[in-house]
Length: 108
Image (cartoon, rainbow, N blue to C red; front, side):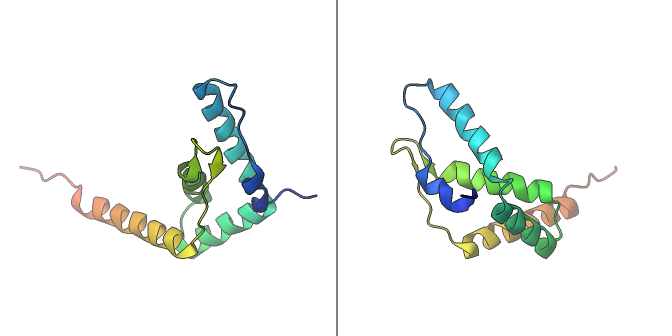
């Protein structure tokens, strides 16, 4: 069976580990899922759509999944909504433009 994003629903963390080790294990898993062919394709498509580096999209991808992990339940709470992701990237893009335009220091 090829690994893909559907395997995220079966992911569990051992509760015998320390919280720090659990977090580290979760981050390693998130790094692994970004190399799946389906997630690579999603990252590449979003990157080309928004003209942003794949590295940034990959980070946001992992951040989204990290935030959706419910530690108390030991599951990912995924209500996957492409519209939310797109809205998030557009928001980041506008914040970046705002910072570029208004962050210049005036010379006195």
